[in-house]
Image (tube, rainbow, N blue to C red):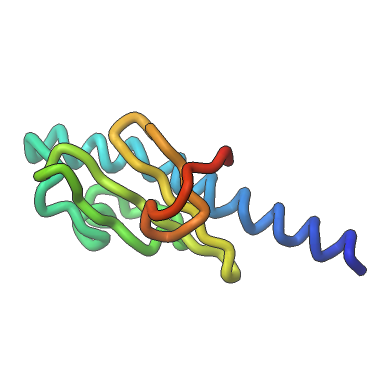
Length: 102
């Protein structure tokens, strides 16, 4: 049983991380269309990319519109990434806490 639990946790982590990796180009496309990330929220990101992964559940614009945080949660396992450039990953939905390696 413990082996299965570890496998399931790793799998849900990978889904959240994969959805975030796939969302980064959508955030960059938003920036290209609008000259910065200001105004980018989850609805705007979904309008830019209708195929955005279902686990992506939070978008926060930081740095006065020059950077962002994307978050995803799958079965209680949360990850987030700071952008542009995926500069840091976090095991939280809001880029808080110590950076982690995905």
